[in-house]
Length: 255
Image (cartoon, rainbow, N blue to C red; front, top):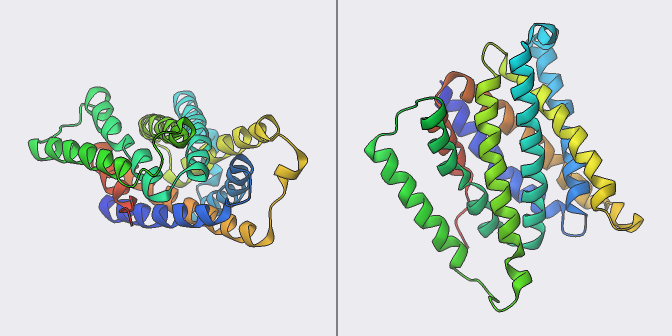
């Protein structure tokens, strides 16, 4: 059953990237991240009340709290890097680099959780790394300008923090309802995102959002919430070394 949730996560995550790109054409990426998180938080806590898991907050162990909070911080850092990369670069390049976190996630899962990696799985990771490199190099319009590669640094940072997100979440959702864990993590992400808004915004004009882009940002937040609920449900019941690669099917081929 965890594969169904993993495929659902991939589907909604693909929608997230497209909708987010439409929502940050003129809007500050950090502000957009913070606004999206508000939508995700509402969606996540709504699901805990629907499923009846909201009352279990007091039963979460100290170690689970620690890992969930760290996972939320890693998610916030990943989002800030990712949506900055998305604003600077192209979706068809940003997403594959970001999703290369799969490789690191599988390796860390093998080391930390002793999850086995078959020869076929290893071959798949090698092919994934090669494919990512080819997608980055293709149609690189202006390699002579250093700033044209700035998106790559942000995308790589997003991949690193995304990998830590999965590993820390896997350690923190033991004996915790996945919907509740998602809501707790999202609360941490929300706080982090809004703290970064005044730090990264250079002027008041950068804090404005047009009506059209606000709609896309909200829809992106709903897609993210749906993706998270599916992903962490799959992560709770299945091995991270399988769930993470399936989730990364959300990668988009270059046009």
